[in-house]
Image (cartoon, rainbow, N blue to C red; front, side, top):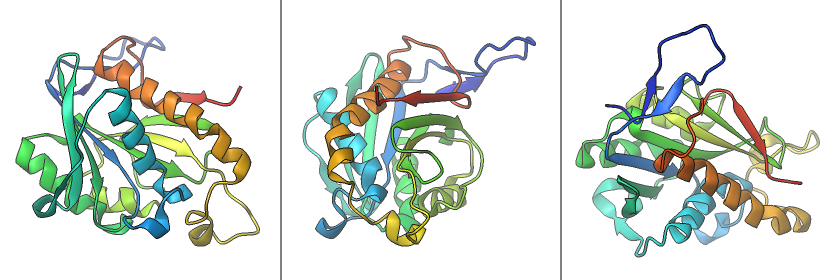
Length: 213
């Protein structure tokens, strides 16, 4: 069974995707390797999986050269959870995802990708299942390697009309935004753990959360 599987259409507003009973889940945080990219907007996926690993008390990130990533794993409820940070640059992220999926026998509908999103304002996180890349190079690479059928946690970083998007995503968060990052990590962690522990059945394609009060 898949991690997220479609429920029959009952004509109601009930969620379309629920957490299945499969025992493995791959969580991918997107970003660029290297100290110069640390704490930039484009690396929020890396930051979220690092925070999640701490929250779940997973220990020991390991560099997997043959799979082009840093990897950590552990147990959450009855789920085996594997988290990775691709060591390739953003536009080659799919290579790492495909390699890990092949090694651990994971299918695309058992994958959750956490990434930055220009089209969502800072302070909001949106969940989605399937669909295109919306111009995000990391998603574009993953789709090329494994297809579109995976879950996404889209973390809003906003945008500045006066700054080229390519430069904006590589900029650091402002001092005020940095104060809010712990709230962001907590909300992203909550979204993932709700699925891992099956405490809340909901649609990944229809929810937006605000982590700024």
